[in-house]
Amino acid sequence: MPTRPLTIPPKLAPSPSPPSTRDSSFVPRREFPYPSNLITSYFLGHHRAGLDKMKQLVSSVELIIECRDYRVPLSSRNPMFEESLREKERLIVYTKRDLAAEELDLKTQETIRKWHRPHQVLFSNSKDRKDVQKIIGYAKGTAATADNMIGSRMLVVGMPNVGKSTLLNAMRRVGTGNSKKAAITGGQPGVTRKISMAVKISDDPLVYLMDSPGVFVPYMPNPQTMLSLALVGCVKDSLLNAATLADYLLFHLNLRDPSLYSGYCSPTNDIMELLTATAKATGRLLKGGSPDFDATAYWLVQRYRAGVLGKFILDDVSETAYQAWLDAEGKQGESKSAAQKRIKEERKLAKMKKRRDAEI
Image (cartoon, rainbow, N blue to C red; front, side, top):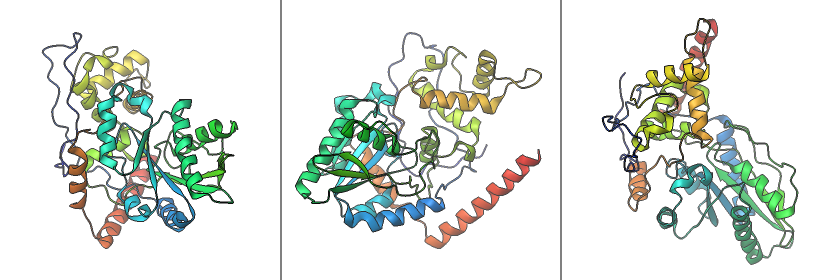
């Protein structure tokens, strides 16, 4: 399969020392064969509309709470927020820390905090009351300083499916005792399509929080970043080949610990071997007993997303990683007209593929 060279320096964290259960003869791949036909855009109409509305609201809110997925701390950064929301105080919340808990050590936290100075950074598991209380405490401190007679309004933003709505519901529950969901949540991106009504998260001081649709970047030239975001659920599963996504997961599992999938298959670099063995072990078979590769691939990916098939960070977390990321980001510009033409062509090809699949 044709591959595309990386345009951002490799971001893989060093693999841990081999555990005793690992096959000493097995050698994991050090490079992943990125497909040349991988999508480079997931910038939808409601993304643009949401970003435009955010710009209008900036002057009327006291705080921006930007959510990023802790499993992809670099990949889930949206540079458009830097351009559109930089004039407002911002709290950066790394969500879903429980899904990468094994790497949430003091060194990792401090490194990420250094990336964002002078912005405040918090790490959150929305099911952990103490984590949510810290975020509410920061919001209340900002509100007390603003001393707004009619209450302070704040806005939560982030890439698609990084946990914005889940965080808003948790802040409402912990802050006011109201457990009724104020924002709809879902396992796939695109559930929130517009800026929500203000939801009260504190009575004293009075604080309201607004949810917003996840906003992707117009152009993603780096296939590694696109696959990382897709693996954690920031891109709709239907837009990527299931086996490719599962193969990318296998690549990372092998770099860390192949025994994570030892219940289904011995260590392998061959995704079809893993899918075949897993399909037979879990009963995901088609008529005649042949493996259902797509269903098995998505099942494995969902296991990772749920924290069952390993808990680890996909991006590099080091002192120099953030600046290297910013430097590479600045070199990946594309003219607006070129981007529009490319996205239009990609959408046309996607519609044709959908029609062909429906005819099969």
